[in-house]
Length: 162
Image 1 (tube, rainbow, N blue to C red):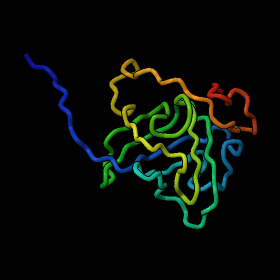
Image 2 (cartoon, rainbow, N blue to C red; image 1 turned 60 degrees about the vertical axis):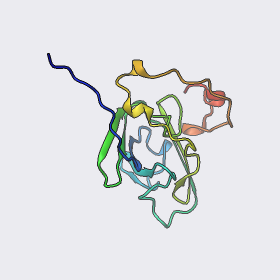
Image 3 (cartoon, rainbow, N blue to C red; image 1 turned 30 degrees about the vertical axis):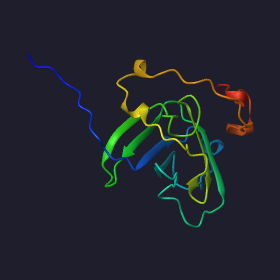
Image 4 (cartoon, helix red, strand yellow; image 1 turned 135 degrees about the vertical axis):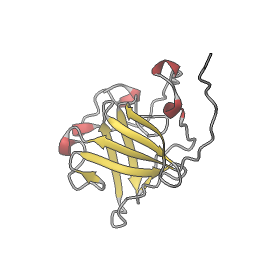
């Protein structure tokens, strides 16, 4: 009899490539927003620092990338040589990427660094066999009022949906 045995393998992860669709045009982000390419936003973020590797040096001011991505992004963990180690094609892994409920990304960017990048890195979402393996999220504490798409804050205060 042959069986498949899962063996732990140690890999080094240095960055995550984020590719998300701009669903609502300029209501999401302006056409000239750094790293926007037509209907896509693409960036590679260093795991340990939150630095966006492709960020243009001439854009030091504060930027906010707050979009509803609705399970339509591609998030790829990369090794030091750019090797793809794990990938999620769909929901946003909010244990790593700031945002809410797997449907939103919320990157506060200053000088090319995500300033709200998590202090404790959690890559669990990338290595689960299925959604059933996913532990329930801890209750979220109310945070600051955040303005979402089209200047509306409806449903976003205190961790509400949207």
